[in-house]
Length: 163
Image (cartoon, rainbow, N blue to C red):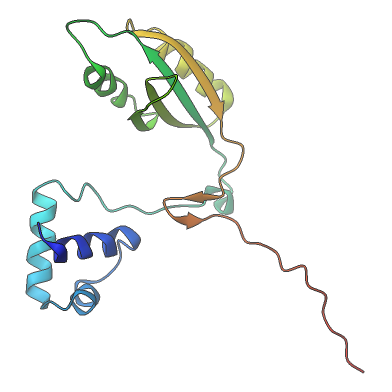
């Protein structure tokens, strides 16, 4: 991996719809080189997937997002990776991270209702043998996600009136 690969990755992370031609112009490489580099990065698993970030509020779909923090009890047979791998299999889980601080793991969940989040926590997460306790935080509003701003500040300036 070299600096050109990093440049290509940064461009794709910012806009996954960038064309090979545009990327080639931005990083000063020929088109074939960009295509082969991206193919290699995909094959090596560096590029996991191409995503679309949707503002569901504008679509009119309502989702409830929750951040669930877990304290887990490790055993000789399993560590954080084993527990995280098991939790990651649940389709409700969008993100799972090992964190520092008072809690061990942090999960981001998306569901259709608070009741569904509650059921997920009580029936799937809390019942796992290694989970000692959970703390659930409901997301009230998203202002920025993946580097993209989700709100439009209204211009409250008065209009000038001329005679």
